[in-house]
Length: 428
Image 1: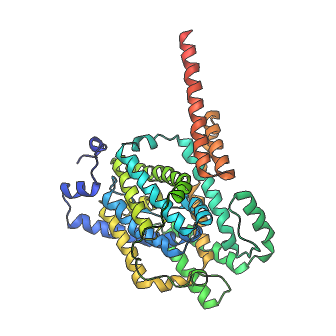
Image 2: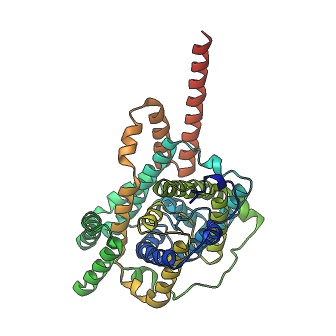
Image 3: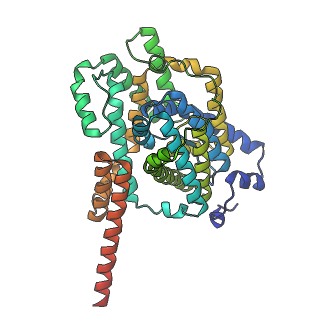
C-alpha cells in the first residue's frame, strides 16, 4: 500500500482517500475503539484547557466536538485529532482578558480564515521549516506559563485582586496570597497528578486522566471537602451545542484583533503540522500539509461560530489515536461524536469536578509538554542554545509571538553568518 508521499501536494482530504482505497468492517471496528479511547482522554482535558484559558468548561467541549470533527473530516492527515490545546492557554486567556469572549471568538474566526489562505497558497511546507530549537523553546516556555496559571486553583489561593497575566507579576501576586493556601485543594491536585503518573506507568492502556478526575470528584463529594468545583464557579453546563452565531464585527474591532489573530494563526499552523508530522513518524505515512492547514482554518471558523475556542492538531491525543489502533480519519470524527454524547447525557455531572483536580491534570500536561531532554541536548551547541534561549526567554517575559519571531530571527542570522564563513574559507 502506498504511504502517501507522492500525494502530499494534493488538496484532497485523507477521508476521501481512505474510502477510495476501501473501508470495511474491520477498519471501522478499530476506528470505533480508538475513538472511544481518545474521547476518554479528551473529555477532562478539553474542560481543563478551557477553564485554564479563562472560559467556561463547555467551550472546550464545543471545540473538541465541532473543531475536532472538521479537522478529521477535511484534514490532510489520517490520524490527526483536533481540539483545544494547552499551547493556546496563554494566548486565549490574554485575549479574553483584553477583548472579552466576543473578541476571542472573532480572533479565532479571523485566524481560521488566515489558515485557509495559508493552505490555499501552499505555505504549509514553509511553516514546517521553523527551526526545531524555536519549537522546543516556545513549548518549554508555554509549559512554565501554564503551570504558573494553575497555582491559583491547585493551591486554592484567594487573591485580593484579579490575577495578573504576565509571569513575574503573577508569581508576585500568588506569593502574596500564600497564606490563604487550602491544604485540601493542594492534596486533591497532587493526588490527581500522582494517579495519572502511576496509572500511565503501571497500566498505560487505562484512562488515567479520567480515572483521576472521577476519583477526586467522588472523594470531594463524599468527604465534603471545602474545594471550589466547576459548578460553584460556572454553574451547570448546557446539554448540547448552542446555535451558531457570528461575533460582532466592525472595522475597528478587526484592526484591534489583527495582531492576536496572527498569533493564533502562527501557533495554530505550527502546532497542527508538528502534530501531523509526529503522526507520520509513528505510522510511516505522509500528511498533506496544505490540505491540513485549510481544514484547520475551516475548523477554527466553525468552532468560533459555535462558541468554541481555538482548534489545532493535538499531539498527545493524536499519538493516543495512533497507539489505540486507528485506521482512518473516521476515528477522529467518532471521537467528536462520543464527546457530544457525553455533553448531552452527562453534562450535569461535570459540576462536581474540583478545579484543583483539573489543575493537577494540567500540571502533568505541563511536565510532559516541556521536552526536558531535548532542551538539555540543544544547550550543548552554542548556536542552537542561542536560538533556544532567545525563544524561551522572550516567551516567558514577553509573549509567544515575540518569542517565536526572535528565535527565527536569531536562527536566520546565525545561518547567514555561518554560510558566509564557510564561503570565505572555501575561497582561500
